[in-house]
Image (tube, rainbow, N blue to C red; front, top):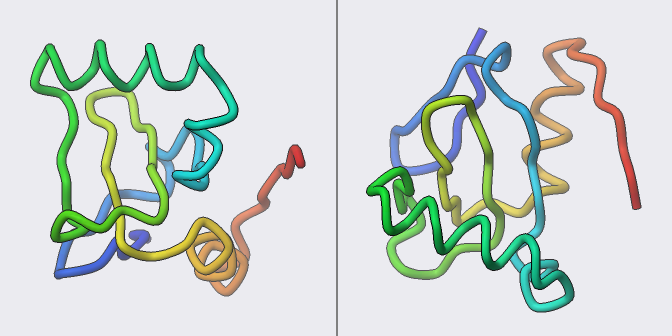
Length: 87
C-alpha cells in the first residue's frame, strides 16, 4: 500500500519513518539542520509546488508535500496503518 503525497507522488507506507508539519521546523533547530543537510545531499524531493505543508521522512529521501500532516495521517488510518503520535 502507498501513501499519496500529492501531484501523483507516492511512497510505500512501510518506508515512512516520520510525518511532520512544516511549521515545526521553525520551532526545532535540530529539524531545520537535518533538512538542510538532506537538501545539501540532494535527498529532498519537493512535490509541493513550492508551498510545503508537511514533510515525510523515508530511509532514502525527505519529501515536501502540499498536503498537511494531519491529512496524511488520516490517509494512513484509512489503510488501517497504526500511527504513533507525538504532539
